[in-house]
Image 1 (cartoon, rainbow, N blue to C red):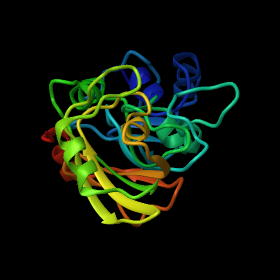
Image 2: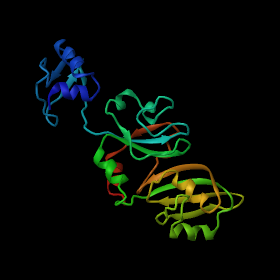
Image 3: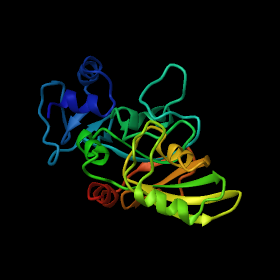
Image 4: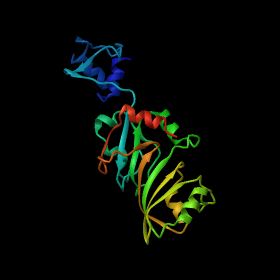
Length: 237
């Protein structure tokens, strides 16, 4: 890879800015000064430093975010804070985007990446990747609801959802549940409960496929995913 492209990709500025940086003589490859932006670096073999600091290059980035309420699942917005606004510069330079979306008032597990292939695999209806939510519900959730969700419920626009796995954690005037679905229709969980005359008060996504949200991440916090976690997500059904 050309060294100017490499340095630009990891946040050292535009190609023009990197060109100026190279001319100052602070960039070294295997200890040798490199000033030509066309110089090709063997990423797996050679060591690149800028001002004596090792440059770590990676093509893709994978982040696990515990999204808070009030933040929208978008890369930019003129009126609202986005999930990208929660990231440090060292991660935004990779131009990540949210995989799927969580509603503005929904919390929980959101993956951000610049890997378009992974995003497509997770969001493709053909993959049927499970997404599990915890919710607080206004109204008593019953075994009858469990059976209805298992069959699929008809939403307000006439669409019949694919089967959902509903688990009652606590039943009463205010109920607590877990729901696993394989789709991501607009406001789907809320609309599924409206279909059985109940209202979602609080909603949080806790897992995607077989990967659960790291419980140590507080709302608004995120971290890079491990190789093992990335593989778990890749192999999710």
